[in-house]
Image (cartoon, rainbow, N blue to C red; front, side):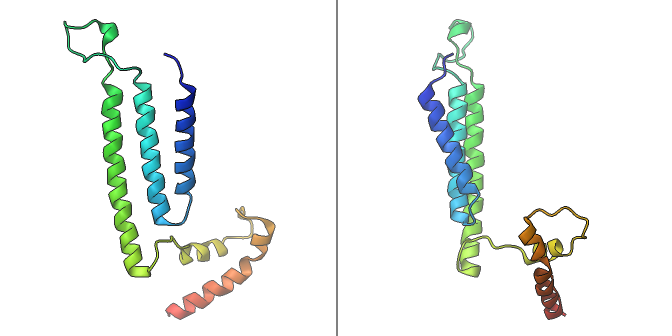
Length: 149
């Protein structure tokens, strides 16, 4: 089986665009990223199946002429999974739009509070400037806790 360079480039572009869109904060961009990745997965599975052949009916065709049905079954499964994720993300986006007025995923305040309370010996994920800014975040989190009481 030969590798088609143009199809490899198309797959690389589909996966790159899909993963780029997944890293965005907007639920609609995430949804489009899932759909693009689903199309890339379907194309990859169809390319892995090889060239078209004959139906796998025993005693009527030679084994060399038979098409492998597994990539086609996996592609159908990928279509169903992509459809399920699409409907779920559409529901999330709609619910976010109704409740908040936009579909942007916000930072979790509780996660910021826990990150600000990490011990001094803990490994910092950010840069030195972000680590030095942690006491300001701690003051904000204390104000939030006092507001809850």
